[in-house]
Each structure stands twice: as C-alpha cells, then as structure tokens.
Image 1 (cartoon, helix red, strand yellow):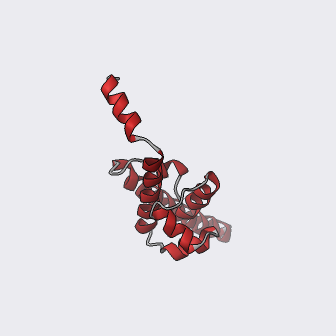
Image 2 (tube, rainbow, N blue to C red):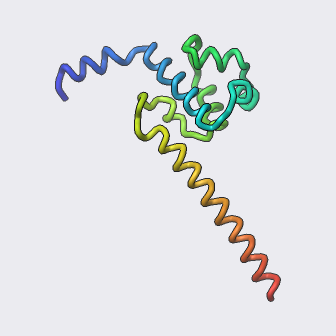
Image 3 (cartoon, rainbow, N blue to C red):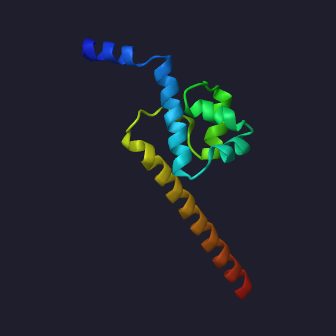
Length: 121
C-alpha cells in the first residue's frame, strides 16, 4: 500500500470517526426498519435519551450495548462499523429480509404438506 494512503487512513480513523460511524449506522438501520428511538430504547432496555445521545455522537457505546442493538435491529454487530455510503449496508438488510421471508414460506409449506400427508394416511 502507498505510504500516503496509509497515512490518510491513520489520520482519518480516530475516536470521533468511530463514534460518528456507529451513530450514523444505528440511526440508518433504525430508520430503515421504521423503529423510533423510543421503541428501540424500550426493546433494548436503554433509555430514549441514551439512544438520542448515541445517534448525536454525544455518548459512546460498549460492546454490550452494541450486542443489544444488533439483536433488536436484526443485524450483525460489524454493520455498525461499515463506512458511510458502503453499498453493502442496505443490501445486508434486504438480504436478511429476503432470508427471513423465504424461511417463513418454507416453514409454512412444510407444515401444510406435512399436515396434509399425515391427514391422508
């Protein structure tokens, strides 16, 4: 890697950058799922003020908090660290939604046909 590129990356990544990245991604992922700050707070056991402070870069988050947020938002924790404008950000949500929908259809069809096969015997 070019030394100038390495220096640019080192200079760009600091504590504020990481806080901003996490806050932007939490807000984006929450908004994509139409979850209010209040509902996110209630679902995670955090306070509304704390969620607001995270999204406005006033507070940092622990690994424990990120774990809670990832469960409620249905994403992997690494998604909070993806750079702004990353093409994968929105795709991960859609792939998960597709996966969940497909699993639901498979389960419904399985139940339908298993029930029908048992009934016909």
